[in-house]
Length: 86
Length: 154
Image (cartoon, rainbow over all chains, first blue to last red; front, side, top):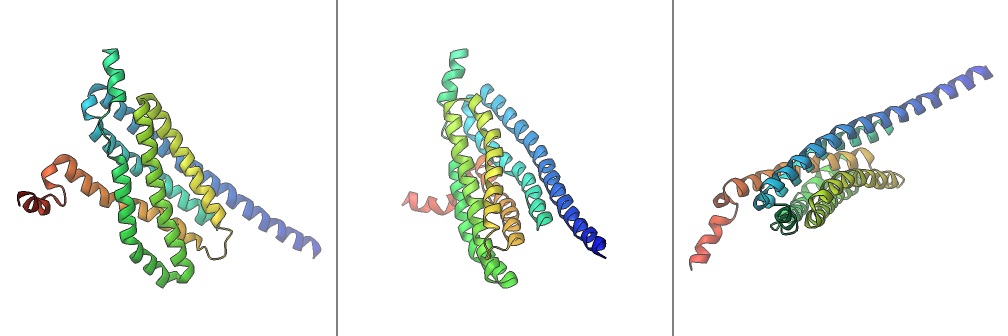
């Protein structure tokens, strides 16, 4: 009986541990894509600004919105991380 | 050619990202009563408080991001790339730490807080994009232009 209680406790701890690991993987994986996306957005914006410095204002405006939209993808992982953890 | 590039980097036209971020924050203030009331009705007082904090975090995130881009772009284009990518990681990390810290308080409704952050971030951006695309593509269609013209003529 005592062994069964210990096994049940360990199963609970294992579940909590796996839940935390899963949440961490979700968050990390969700942050990789936006990181690459932001790199592409900024890289292309810099190319555009170097080619046409007079267009830097509109390019930076568009870049800012592009970054914010790409960042929203990371926020999905952020939400899933906390929902999986809770 | 090289010198003109250096000059161009330091003499970039006034960027509007700070104005956009301020505008987004103003829009967040406008939607705040609706979001807070809605969350309050569904999840109670804890939901309302969490929604308010979520909205404040979203507005702060936009403002910090815009100030960082403005500062880095004024220095150099190379710094801009580093600042944006570094800023993304740091802001995401800071947001996670803030929410993890807030999670300890009993009055925080975690699902409402994180969902408010994600949903209002996207919602405010879509709202702002409509405004910005009108301004960039057709300045004459900028919201408020037609209302101002009669006063200018007078």
